Length: 520
Image (tube, rainbow, N blue to C red; front, side):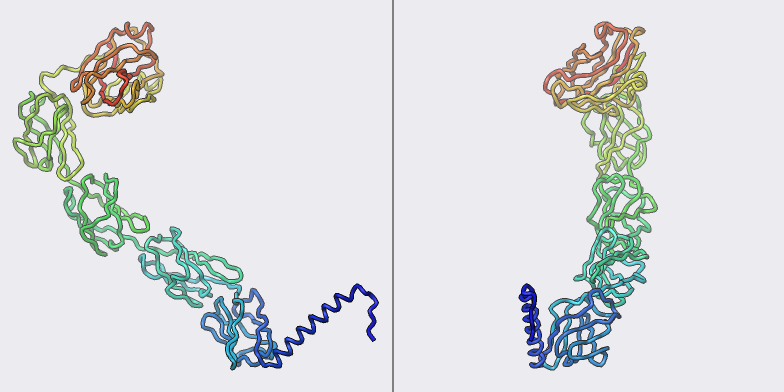
């Protein structure tokens, strides 16, 4: 007779007995019914080649076990086979997935997926290939690969693999992939990644030759080379936007029209990856050039003879302070004869170029007969550049209400450059010279020349000295006007430390040019 001395243990004992009875009944029912039942399998973290254990009921009726990856283990290959236990060796080709037990009564499919601890490794990869071609990766347990990352962060996932097996993985190279090692991602109970020791070299377009060279704007350039069908863009020297439209294109030849802004220099081809290859040779784009101008000085209304090279490419001649001249007395590759318009100013001569946005300027200045000579200045403040009596001791720049360009080439009063001041706001002063200490004792006169651009007539500017507005100027449009101002009216001190040229109409929206600035 069973005696229970501790009444508090009674509920626990009853529960354990109940569970044992229920489990025994189910097991007996399944065994009695002859049905095959898979209760568990493992261990978790097993590797290919390890022993895999299946626990269940009536397992002696299992004829084979199918694993994902097209792998089947026949009954004859079972290490152990009883009604409650089957032991097998995990095949090398096994992949993650559900397990199927084959029986005469039908298939038993596991409720969970088999997952393994996979020591994936890489032994070799394709060395060189074109974008869009296949790269072959060899190694071990590659059937577990879930993705491949190419250089430039281009990832191909398992849904896009060409093929994969235990020892080989084949993947198509993305069109925009770059040269570099590959990273292979893999799954399993401990997913990871492995980087190839070798580098995949992605093929790029290469220029071998270009013809004709030299070439004119808008003419067709024929580029020969290798893998030119991979080029998506061509970059010309001097052209901001790459050319993406070609006359024709093949693997060995590419024909493209020379853009209007192209200048002499190397060509670059850009692949879909953004990687560029540069030509070894320069492409020489033909431009006209001016060698001489005669006579010089010249009277307006008379003929000017310009000599040089490729002058037949000039479409117009531009003189200072006059519209472009497009009708010539005569024109050849070596010479242009053109009538100088009335009202032109001293300055360089500019040629516009056929089929191009480029312009070519003469080295020499064309002097105009009868024009007023430049003012005589003993101590320059600006003479093609701000002079050292300011730059060595102070600052140049700052300002507000517009912009200033101290390297403007046309129009000029003397030398080859002037200061272009563009006023965009009322009472602005885009040009400021300051921080110096120029001794004015040896001098009596402050000099400045001002040229009014179109739309500036009647506008006013004020010359500020040492922080105070001192001399008001009304702009004359279309001509240089020379001003000579007594220093005594500008400052009572012996030094000048700051000069500003301030818009004084209160409206802005006009441009002037300043030159011949200094003391005398």
